[in-house]
Amino acid sequence: GDLLPADGVLIQGNDLKIDESALTGESDHVRKSLDKDPLLLSGTHVMEGSGRMVVTAVGVNSQSGIIFTLLGAAGDDEDDKRDRKGD
Image (cartoon, rainbow, N blue to C red; front, side, top):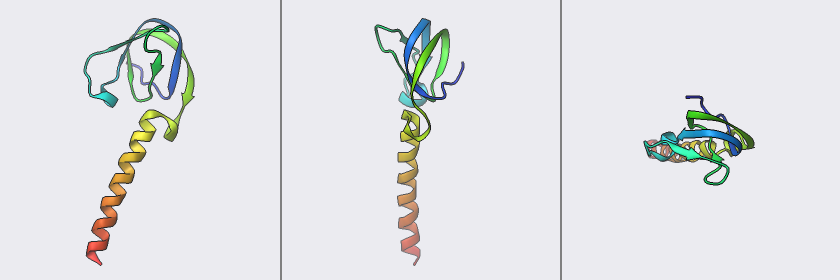
């Protein structure tokens, strides 16, 4: 199970199945192909097959980066509220 480090579009694949449970919560592996569902997301794991992709986003611009940023922003708001109550 190689971890995908970036978002991208599949350009070549051979029986590629991805575990997207880290992002979607869905436990079933998702079959990826050029014709159907070619988007690969960072933070997901390759479970079967192989492929090549063109990277479209990394770091905070990737899907998992956006989620982590939003979660961090929500956590900061809660910290701010607690700090204000203590003043």
